[in-house]
Image (cartoon, rainbow, N blue to C red):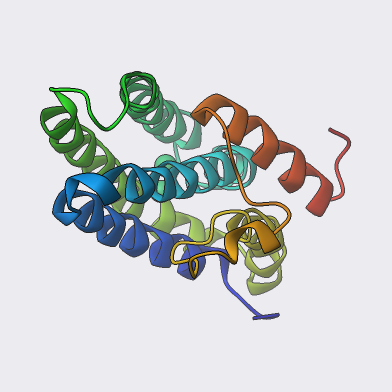
Length: 184
Ligand SMILES: [Fe+2]
Ligand SMILES: [Fe+2]
């Protein structure tokens, strides 16, 4: 795991996010909340890592970087607002399934745009060493969002994310900045 490319890592997270959407959709009513929490955690980790590490790089390195990143941030914020509303209303809310479908469509369209307009260019404009160094922060964040914890062992992971999506994102941001050697 020491030699990971940040783009590979983010693409793998896009796939994990799709899988977790499947799980939440297919979960029986009594398991839906738990699966949704895992999805919220992974989204908090993934989007915060992109915002802290990858988008700033893309702004500087790729052609028209500012515009590409502004478009991605607008998509991320839209999805985040819906995610916060869903988290507040809870998995029992009557419009949960409908909102989940909307969230999924937004998150997946956003991921496709990143892959098409940002990641491909970023790979071409960065060195392997730069991509490995960016991966350090993403991996530190990913450890806080176990996607398939064994029942009962989750509390053993000290850093596992709890609370509202906003609280999770704040925590992820701190961990990333520490891992990247920046002052919080
Ligand atoms: Fe994103
Ligand atoms: Fe992404």
